[in-house]
Image 1 (spheres, rainbow, N blue to C red):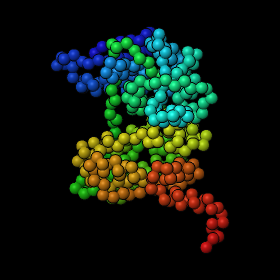
Image 2: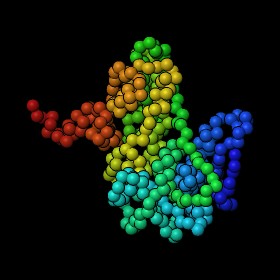
Image 3: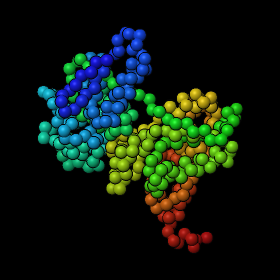
Image 4: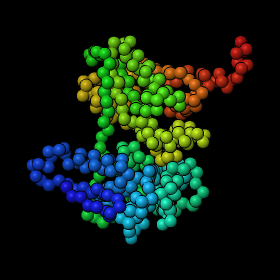
Length: 354
């Protein structure tokens, strides 16, 4: 494996194909090793090189980027000037037309904070100079999302002597409750990890409530499965969920906050959950969820969904707007939330009406 350094101040790992030696796969397939290293580099805020055909670009996440890394990246790209790659969702949030990723020119005097504002602020006053993005942009965004970084990357074409970083799979956890009968439909909860709700009991969402309700339901039915998926914040990651919370505090709902940051309104992928069920020998389930998209995702992948059990947690002043957005905009089956919202809209007089 070849290693190339971009300069003294920021390490840039670049990897190629292993040699044909019989020892090349001792520690895993070369493509999987490369994928894991690419993911690790993004998680540590370091750049990687991605290649498609004859084109190669260096890409660097901008969230958490210090000015020192920005300076080193500019040095790597010299004499060319890097641009900021943003997703089509983020481009539309900035008022740009089109349904494709965009490249935004950055000035030589822009510091790390200036560039991050281009990537994440709800409103901008500076003019935007749009340039054509690299065709590799979509793959770079996928790597950023898997690393749970903001899908906004500094990018620049580089000399053709480095190699690609690939997308690694997510690693979930399966929790078997009791002794479920796999010959019958097994109660199943697909639960996306939520540190704020599951661990700290945040009132801004119903995640922790749903997890506790699911565990109680599985015990009541004699057992079942919980797939605890590493998909914090609807697949955005913890840091980006905190950024979305900040935008929600300015008036956006949970879906719009995600798209302003450049994400889809829901970035979760249930393909890995399907594979886990197949490995467990579970092909028939009763799903504990309020989200019909989960039913559709499993059904399309060949898992027989024989029923659905709702999980309705308590409504409070902190999660009411969040739950209402899920019910009215994301199609979650939360009629009790809509009923409560209607009653609140009627006001105190509603209790005196016949």
